[in-house]
Length: 243
Image (cartoon, rainbow, N blue to C red; front, side, top):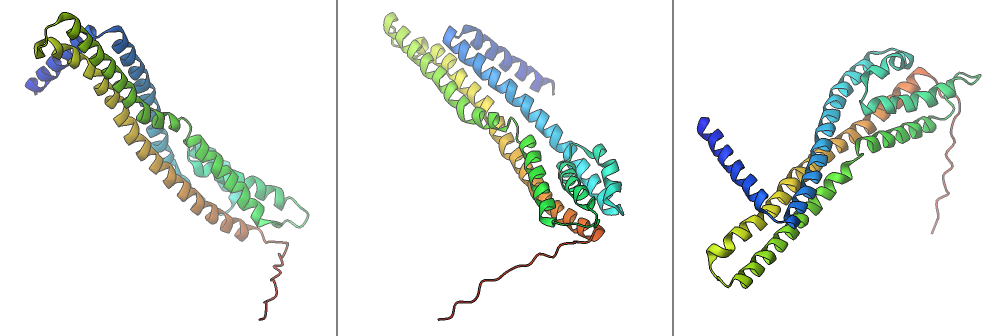
């Protein structure tokens, strides 16, 4: 354990020394990569926290929804289950349900309107979950090229110095190239976590989208059980074409 900490300290010290010895352009590139990395990690940590809480609250909300006898009982306690996206879907459908049962017949006039309200609410919830996700995609796509730019610039500078000094030896050019390669490594360090997190978080969001669709159907069943449909919808079929 102590040997591992010693190796980390030595390697970290060498990297810090190399960074301090880099040129102005390389330091600017490293600063840009550091900014990308900090913002990306802030998004990753906030998204993981949001999704973890949403997953736990969604399970609790589903259990409460299935135990409740009336939709009004679920509405009274729904707010405590946020940030579950199922709460937003429920509230969108319940608001339309409440408007329809307020008519003189006391029944549902248009179940499709309730379904559309839940679809709109589901879309809004997914938009909220996907907020700032494009930044992770941009980080994963752009930072390797930013790091490569710093490396190419550093190699050009190293060979230019080699040409002016006239000492065509590996000892003369190696320090400049090693300093230049730091920016490529920094670009990969910024890009790899962003790409991994983008795919994992995107998968979790798609899972929530699927669960939201299933819940909308379950909600529609509960609505139709609680209040009768007062309007019968007539479907007119086109006559069969005889040959």
